[in-house]
Image 1 (cartoon, rainbow over the protein chains, first blue to last red):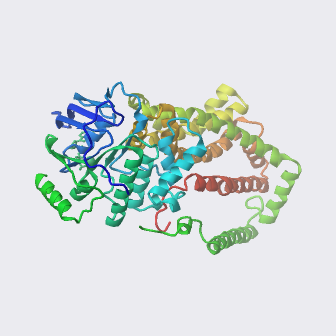
Image 2 (cartoon, rainbow over the protein chains, first blue to last red):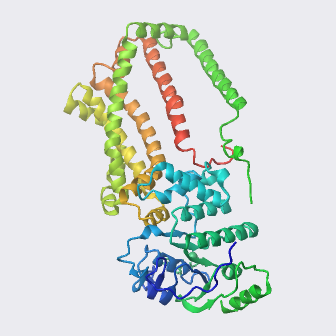
Image 3 (cartoon, each protein chain N blue to C red):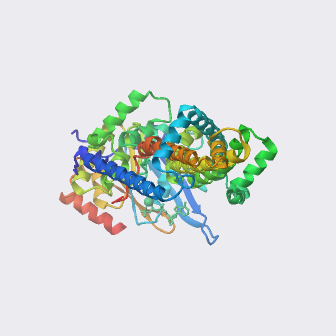
Length: 263
Length: 270
Ligand SMILES: Nc1ncnc2c1ncn2[C@@H]1O[C@H](COP(=O)(O)OP(=O)(O)OP(=O)(O)O)[C@@H](O)[C@H]1O
Ligand SMILES: [Mg+2]
């Protein structure tokens, strides 16, 4: 593996893959009638081709923030810019892929058909869809299960199918909500390595949510720590360790320890 | 990495020995019924309960003179027409009522009312409106089958998973494709069970309609035979219907359902 550059230079925001979150606030209607503020004035710039982790307690609005970045939820205040274009006018959504917190596999589709689903918006020929889906499944180690239905897969396998589905469209921006939380430690380490390799190869920007501090330290260039009620940014920590990183090394462990005290 | 043998994943079909056993059981059941029937028929006059041999003779008679196939075809054609019309109307209406809450709430009371109206009443109306014709039977089948299909499809649209819609939304999938790729597969099992119910009901009410307002078809033949106290022919017609429904169920519907819904997890021990 090539040693990745740790610090990404502050990129011009028009570069492909750059994300800017400007003054975003979000309220949800509640049953009682008083709106609940979930996000409060979030400001965040994410450089193209960087890896950013979002850490924070349960319920502090991490999923909501990803929903807003992916354009499926509109904030009451503030705006999102992707490649320097505001979300309202941005059209290249096909280059943004979102791996949800739940796997969301369609139960009536086999593994490979589920992966192909991500390619069915355009008019890609069937044979190409299939071969790309097959490659993506090989990447996550599920080539033996292409014809299995979701109910025949374990939880970890299901989330790997979801990962394959979000990679198959070869996105510039990959948003991931707790992507590896259901994997065992060994598989997770493997997936980390694979992901970083793909990220290098395809020059992707990755924004992922995690509860696992070690995971954040191993993968991310920057860690955004959020505070709850209402969700806001408590701190942004640059991780300047050289790659590849190992969670058991003293420097990594120390950083993880420091981060834990922030949450 | 967790590995399961791939062959195990496809090991769904029941073992061969088990299936053979089932066939034997069914044959045994038929034999028992025939035996009881035969024993009973020995003790009562043939116009009350004709024995198996007599019924077989009647069956060969009506199949030889062509009535059997012709009238079966006529009735099947009417049931099929009514059923297809009911699907063409019921499927879109069910989807519309399911997708549009306002419309659904407005029309909701009609369905139980329609379901409670007896098919004899529909048949009476049909005779007034259409006289003795094909349309009478078709109408009765239609009025019976349509509410069943609407209800089931409606219920199906309510179970569409919002998470899947959101997934399609993230992929910026056009509405028509979302309909085809998410709504339709979700509704299909509901539609299927509704359609099967509707077809069964339609078949039964078609006979009622034919005895009242028709000069052909199985229902007409049944009444004719009853009027002439040809009990053996009544039995012959009944037997034909039972066999036909069994073939339809086991030869077409069951395999189709097994194939279409092979993605469903089977409950343990079923
Ligand atoms: N559609 C919605 N309607 C109303 N409230 C919502 C909605 N979605 C989220 N919320 C509320 O917003 C808050 C943040 O939710 P969110 O899912 O973003 O949290 P999270 O940080 O992802 O939590 P977790 O780590 O448990 O996944 C929660 O209090 C939740 O109840
Ligand atoms: Mg969440």
